[in-house]
Image (cartoon, rainbow, N blue to C red; front, side, top):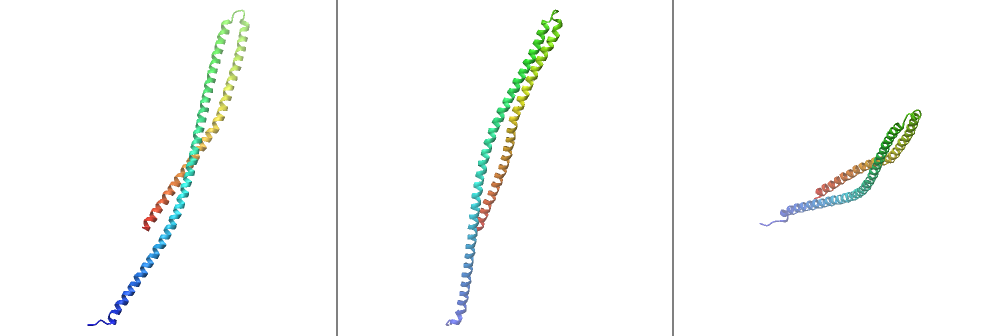
Length: 199
């Protein structure tokens, strides 16, 4: 039994159609894959640029944080020194005041012991004069102590304000750094997701 052209021609044509369809499908799939790869490469490049910018910003923020921390430490040392100086001045003033009060008591006792019948009339006026002199001296010492205390307070106040500003700035930098880390983490997750989708 012979096979004619009419018998195998439909099979050949069907095979050619199927082969053409498969070739077209594979070509379309390959083009789609190339386009996806191009988009992925572009996205990866963009994410790499963003990652580089975020890393640079993080380095700047860390440098600022380090500088502010050093400034804060220096200001704390200055405040500590001034507080120590203030306490020393107060202690010295208290000691001077105690000495003056002790001297007043001793002078008063001495004047009382020296009083006699011959000096009885003049004794009271002399004690009052001595007391007035001592009171003036005490007032001067108290005024000197108060002026020193005010001067040291004026020195401490700006340093305290500077410390508060430094603390505030450090808080802001810490927030910026946390935001930068969060953004960086999200970008890395996006890159990983894109890479997984490509695979």
